[in-house]
Image 1: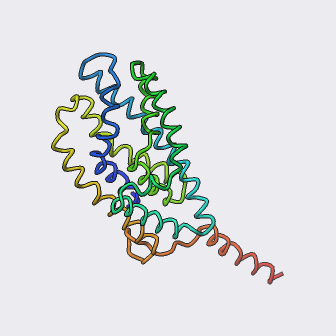
Image 2: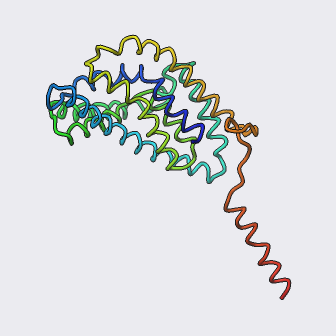
Image 3: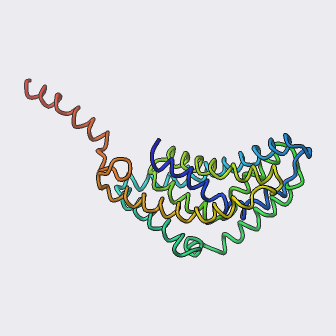
Length: 246
């Protein structure tokens, strides 16, 4: 697996403490069809499945931007910039949110919360899945950081996979929180909270190194040759030779 994609999962796990604080109240507020362990577990997977789908769709959308930058020959600069931005989210908390159009976001948040409030009391599978999707669209600094990493992948499938792995990394803690009603998550939360900034900075440094293309295997591979250019090059040789023979 690509080193960056593996790091996406680790980032999700390390950011679980943040997710518990942001998404935990929603996870606990959404009711289960029945008050049994099996019902709570099943509803947790459905709820988180909706959130995962939202993250994948966001990844695909941001991946389109990354792919455009790659075609424009700006992938190296985008990767380095993404790494710097990730480091800034730790060194200067809230830096990403400050650059966003807050008025439009406030309107969007209000609408999303209104939709979630209507569906929180519904326990059908489709209602739980929809609540999870809305949860995935709520503003979150950690998700913004993951999206920066997804954009640096330079391809829509890779960006979507990056966000899927990030979502999977956040799921275990939220599922345990919901199934246990928050009773077994305290100690792990503090450890994860300390680990999260380290992982985010590590991901940022890894992106910067990859963008610099230092020729270090796995960590900072050298410049990659465009397969299309190679094909064209190999394909043109015999043709030109054939023309000369004629």
